[in-house]
Length: 308
Image (cartoon, rainbow, N blue to C red; front, side, top):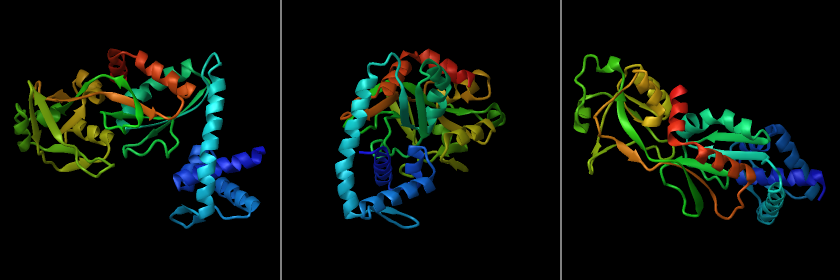
């Protein structure tokens, strides 16, 4: 296959998998108009329409479905062959695409990126902050990172960070003229800033545990965000009480801008996990990333967050 035809085939597969020209163009590192032209040229070369396009959607024709089914295994085999050769390199190289929860990207991965890229200068890292739990296979990501263990069973899972806490916090300004809550039930009389999840549109539950006892409190408040960073800022500004992972507020607690509440009442979370498809050979850059992250101790990660 000629180089031009291979590039056109790769472009077609990207569009077919994403069902979206903009997302496919971002994956390939080209502009949407250039991608559209490549697809048109490919269809003209083959003499058959592969995609039905409208202003809002992209769908495969019967010929497109057939080509995608035949092309995907071939492209995966090429990726595997190239990765096999890369295993003989002294240092890993190539692209590494990771999808992860926005909180993970901000608090854990982001602070460590400069050190990682400094250690592996031939790796090109792309991080997609995504709170929707989208499919990493269809998105052609090498791996994903999530908080907790809600991960498909056909994935290989690697723990990156041990158990941590989610806890109630507030600013000194908010607490100045209010009675500080002593038990989770006391939150009913406070303004609580809540988080709505993008993936199912539900509002985050406020669950607390202490000495084997668990309580879920149906809190209320005047403000809801779908972004944790905005929520934290509102709590810092004294709007109300927030229910936030400890690793995100460690620096604010350390400098006195936020105050932990309710003593030992908190919610333990199992950890942070990286996952990747079990049927795929692990790329060298992904292996390097996993080894690098696992080499970081829990204390070192929290120190990095505290300096952020």
